[in-house]
Length: 626
Image 1: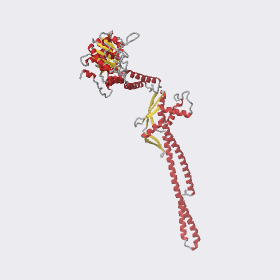
Image 2: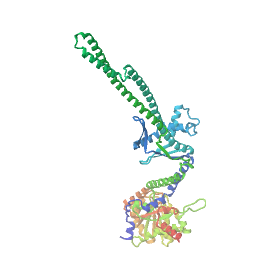
Image 3: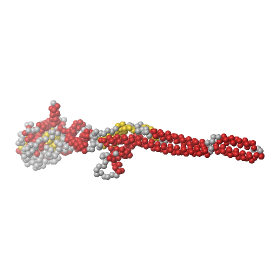
Image 4: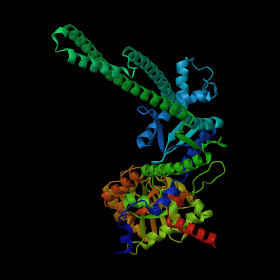
C-alpha cells in the first residue's frame, strides 16, 4: 500500500473497553470550566448553607444496667433478682423512648419554662394538653438512646440548639430513669408493707377472737377442771358397784332404778366431756395455725420494712454528659470537605453528560470517529486586522508577519499532501466544507499562499461564486464568466487569471454564478482546463461551495486529485461532518482527510487538536523541566 493509499484509506477506530487514563485526562481538560463551575456552585451553596444553618450542640451520657433486675415476689412478699435478657433490655429502651417517660423528664427538667420549649411569639394559642404534647414531641426529637450489640451500656445522645440544655437532657434521661426505677421498687415495697400491715392487723383480730372463744368454750364445758374426769369415773365405779349389790334383790328395785339413772347421767356427762375435749383440740389447732400465720406475716413485715432502706439501683450512670464547648452541627470542616467531594463527583458526572451530548468537532479523535479519516492538521485562529473595522486577512497575515503556529500548520498540511501525491504531475486540491462559515475559503487561500511562499506556482480557483470569499481574501475581483463558458472554449482561460497583488506566484481565477455545474461541464473542464492548469502550475487549489448547500462540490470533486473537508473547531457538528463525508463518498470522491480550522491555540491542548500543538506543548514541558 502506497503512502497515498494509506492516507486516503479509512482508518477503523480501535475498540475501547472504557474511558482509560488518557480519555479521562482529556475529559478533565476539555470540561475543566464546566467542572470548576459545578464545584464552585456546590461549594458556594454549602458555604451559604453553613452561614445560615442553626448551630446544634450534642452531649452524650452512658447508662449501664445492672446484671440482674430486683422485683418483689408477690407470693413470698420479698425481693427477688432475675437475670436481664435481651427482651428485658429492649423493653427498657422502649421505656426510655416512651411518651410517659418523656413527660416525666420534661417535668423533672421544668422544660415548660425553658426558652427553647416556649412557643414562639405569634404562634397559635394552645391548651394545656396540646402544649404538653408539643413539649414531649420536641423532647423526644432532641435525644436518642441505643446500645451496641449485647452490651448492657445504653448510650444517651442529646442534641439541641443550647449547649447547657443538651447536657441537661442527656443527664436528665439517666437520672430520671434511675429515679423512676428506684421509685417503682420503693412503691412496690411500700405497697407490700401496707398489705402486710393490714394482713397482720386482721390476723391479730382473728387470733384474739379465737382466744376469747376458746376461753368461753373451756368455761362452758368445765374443761379447766383437771379432776372432773377422775371424779366422774370414781362416781361411775361406785354406782356400778351399788347397782351390782342391790340389783338382784326384789325389794330393792326402786333404789336400783334410781342408782341406774344416776349411773346413766354420769356416763352421759363423761361422753359430753370427751366430745368437748375433742372440740377443744380442734379449736386449739386452728388457733395455732392462725397464730403461725400471724407470726409469719409479722416476720415478713419486719423484713420488708428493712428492705425499704436497702433498695438496690437497677442502673447506674457511668458517664456524665458535659456541656459541649463547640457545636456538633453543622460541622463546617467536614461539611465543606464532603461538599467538595460531592461537587467533584457531580462535576465529573456533569462533564460526562456534557461530553456525551457534545456533537461538535474538537479533536482528531472526533473526525476519525465520524469519518474514519485522519485529520491532516489544525489551523490556529487568526486575529483580525485593523484598528476600528477589524477584517479577516489570512493572505496579508502570511505575507507580512505570519504567526509561527499558523504558518507551520499550513506547511505541515502541504507536506502531508505532497508526500501522498499520486504521480509526478501537479496536484489539484479541492477544499470544501459541510456548511458555510466553517473557514474553507480561509483554508484554501492560506494553503495556496503558503505554497506560493515556498516557491510554487499556484492557481487559486474560486468556484464558490455565491460568496466569493477566496477571491476577497486574495484581493482579486469576481468575474462574470462561468465554468461552463470557460470549459466550452467561449472564453480564454489565460486572460481571466489575475495575479495576486499581495503575493508573487499566486494567481486567482474567480468565476461568476452564470451557468449550471452539470456533468457535461465537468467533463469539458476535465478535458480542456485541467491539462492546461497542470502544465502551468505546480498546485491548483479549488474552493467549492459547501457540500450540504450545493451539489457543486460533488461534481467538481471529479477534477481534483485530493479533497479536503474543512471543519471549524468547536463549531462543526460531528453529524454534519459525517453527512458531508458520506455524500462525497457516495459520489465516488476520495477524501484525503479533514482540516480543523479556527483552533484556539490556548485551549487546544484540552482536545488533542493537531500534532503541532502537542509537540509544542511537549517542548514547553521539556524546557520547563530543564
